Image (cartoon, rainbow, N blue to C red):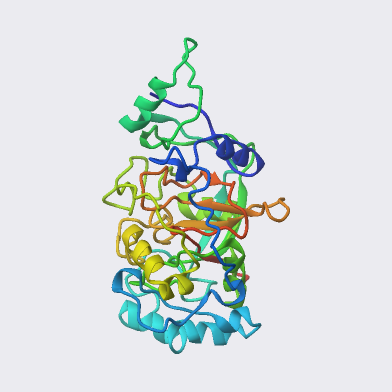
Length: 358
C-alpha cells in the first residue's frame, strides 16, 4: 500500500501530524491520546527536576547524569557545562572519544562547540516522500477500516510504519532555505555512552538548553539535521532498519503514574515501573544511527522536544524522531498534541546553537 501524501514542514506539517495516528497510540487504543501526558498525584517541583542527585545510585538501566541546577537557578553556562561533565567540556570529550573531541567521529564541529556538529546546507521546507511498502500491521489496519471508496475511516491504534520509500525524495518547495547551525551530537545530556534523559517536559528542556548556553532546536532544524540535503526519510536512508536505530521494540503499556525522573527514583513503585518500561540504549551506541551531519540517534531511542515556530504557549511544543517502540520513528513527522508541561517515559531532547560566523 503506497502513500503519496507529502511530508510537510511548518504549519502544514502540524496539520498532517495532528490528524495522523499519534505515535503513542500504538497497541493502546484505550489510552492513546493520554499515554505521554502524565499528571502526577502530587505536583512536581519543576524548578528542581533537572538537578538530579538521587539519594541512592539508580540501577544501570535507568542511570543518567543531570547536574544542571545552576542552569535552572540562573548560573553561568560554563558552570553548567562543568557540572555536566565533571570538569571541563573538552576534557570530558577527550576522555570519551579517545584523545580529541572529534576523534574518529563523523561530521564536523567547525564553528561549533566540541560537543556539537555543524549542520550546513540548503533545506527543503516541503518534501514528497512516497512509501512503497508499509508494515503489515499498518496494512491490516487500513484494510480493516476501508470503506467502499477505498478510504480508511474511524480511529486507528496503529502507527504508520513505512518499510521502504521511493528514491529520491522530491522537494516541492520553489526555493530551498540556506541553514547553518550547531546541534548536539547526542541526546541530552549529550555524552557518549550515557542513557539519554527522559521524563522531561518541554519547558524543562528549554531551561536546560539555555543554561548550557544553547537553545532547544526548532522543528526545521531537527528535520534538516536528521535528513540532510538528500531529504532522507530515515536518518540512515530510505529502508527502515531496526538494526541501525533503536526502534520497533515491543510496546509496553504504562500501568503506574510516573513522576519526573528524580522524584520517580525516590518512589520504589515509580522506579520499578520505569525500569520495566525503559528500553533506551546508551547515546551513540548504535554507530549506524547517525545523520548525514554526524548527529546520533535522531531517529528512535527517545522522542525529542522541539520548538514549533509561530505557536503561542502552551502550543509551542513538538516531539520529533520517534522512540524505541513500534512507532513512525523517522525524520519529518511532528507530534504536536503534547503541551509544554507534559512529560513521558520516552520524552527527552537535545540542544541547538547558532554557528560561529565564517
